[in-house]
Structures are given as structure tokens and as C-alpha cells.
Image 1 (cartoon, helix red, strand yellow):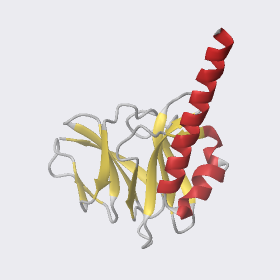
Image 2 (cartoon, helix red, strand yellow):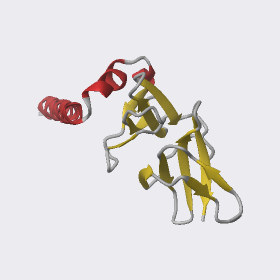
Image 3 (cartoon, one colour):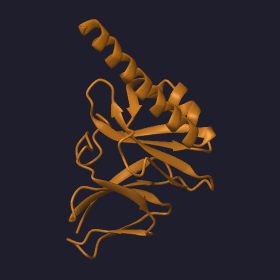
Length: 164
């Protein structure tokens, strides 16, 4: 009896994961699949299927092509982060998931994320200070008073802590 229950649990788990993978594979753009499923970069990470929206799309690096961002988890430590795939070169960039990004190396604190389309990042504790960004970024919201903006500075992805 225990053997049958174990087999049933295994098969249920196996088919649940394969159904999820199949659903994701069928709903992400074709061009990003090679980075997400075949690259050496993703050997240490897995997509986090629990986030809503599941991915964000915008031209994050200003090359005129739509890029895509996913939430990921580190396979070794379980730390969460963001994978941004730039379409032009089909290259992935990992932020967080064990790498410090200005608010720690684990962004499990993020409840909401969205495309940040403003041209400036204002830090409301010091209203005179602002940062110019040239492309859409990603805002990772921690609380109603604090969030992290991920943006491309024409060379690499950077982050800025935004305090309201």
C-alpha cells in the first residue's frame, strides 16, 4: 500500500511539473527559449512560476528590440532574483539570486513587480536628487515606501533603491 502511494505521489509530481513546463514553454516567446532552457547560465537557476505577472516585456537596453524578464530561484540556495534576457544578442543577465543588488542578494521580499516607464528616478527623501534613465526599467516593490529600480545604463544593468 505504501509503495502504491509513493508511486502515485511521484507520478503526480512528475506530471504536474511537466504540465507546468509545457504551459510555460508554449507561452513564452520563441527567441527566449534557448536562454531559459538550454544555456549554461540557467544550469544554476530555475524559473519561478509563482509570480504574477510571470514575465515582463519591454526594451530594457534600448536596442529597439523587446527584452524579457523572469523571476528565478537559485538551485543551490533557493535565493530569488531576476533574469533579464536581451533579445538582440540573446544574452541573459542575473540580478539577485545570490548576487547582491543593493537590497541584498535575495529578493524574496518583492511582492509586486512591473515595468518602470518614467524617465527619472526620484528619491523622495532628497527631492533635489534624481537619476535619468533612458529606457524602461523594472521596479521591484518591497513596501509602499521602498522599492528597487533595475535599469540599463548603456553598458550594464544597475539598481537604485527608491525611498518614498
